[in-house]
Amino acid sequence: MAGFRVGFGYDSHRFEAGRRLVLCGIEIEGETGLKGHSDADVVLHAVIDALLGAAALGDIGSHFPDTDEKWRGADSAKLLSSVVDEVSAAGWRVGNVDVTVICERPKLRPHVEAMRLRLAGLLRCPVGGVSLKGKTNEKMDDVGAGVGIEVHAACLLEGIK
Ligand code: MG
Image (cartoon, rainbow, N blue to C red):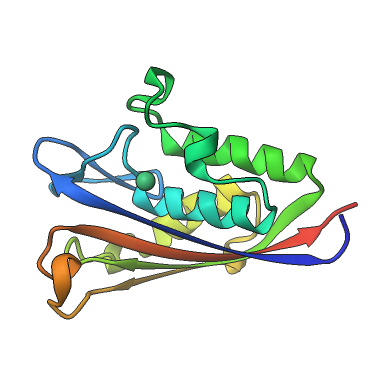
């Protein structure tokens, strides 16, 4: 495919006691985890939908249905890797991604560089093409009340064929 394609992804998960918190394939120790059928990696889920959206290849739910036992506890890093394979086969590579993570906690700053590196590896692109920003919701609405985490992700795909 020639040219460029833009994509946008969104996801949200609520916190659930007793689960581990995995963001961008990295376990954040000592924090409450997120409820979900897979490992509930809300960041990677939004990025997956951004990639699939840019390539017009459907969405995360059509690829990995949460009604399928096969995906229970799934490692979202593996799901993203398989989506990158699919996007590559369709003639695209990731140019850059820009991700905004909204939560009152955990504080993301200490984890941002590790998360960017992990994401760059999974996307097979230079870390300079991976932006990850943490924000709070200024105590507004459910996310601001600490109910869960919300993520918005934009990506650009470049044609390789
Ligand atoms: Mg999700």
